Length: 133
Image (cartoon, rainbow, N blue to C red):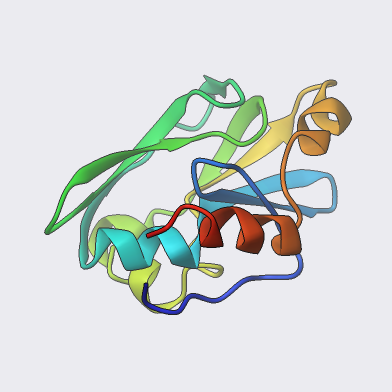
């Protein structure tokens, strides 16, 4: 398995998305582990501003030279901003996965419960190591 980086400021979903809270806003992207598996990202299909997304459900798509994969929302909420830079330069997902966020959400009232189901960086590292990839 190629090495991957963790971000200590985020929580991780088992489907390899991350979420970071910034002033009550949930910022969402894909983990370094995910981008290593994907290889060269060539296209990102983002949700629309105003869309409502549900935790653990597809919110976006990322395509690489290897495959197209769903990007699930780690928490529920209303999309308030998308990272349109990814449309022109999707490769930043490979270069800086924790800066290359996909979308920002205004979380729902269930935020604390949903965050409780996500993994800390240490838990995620253990999870990934046990995938045997």
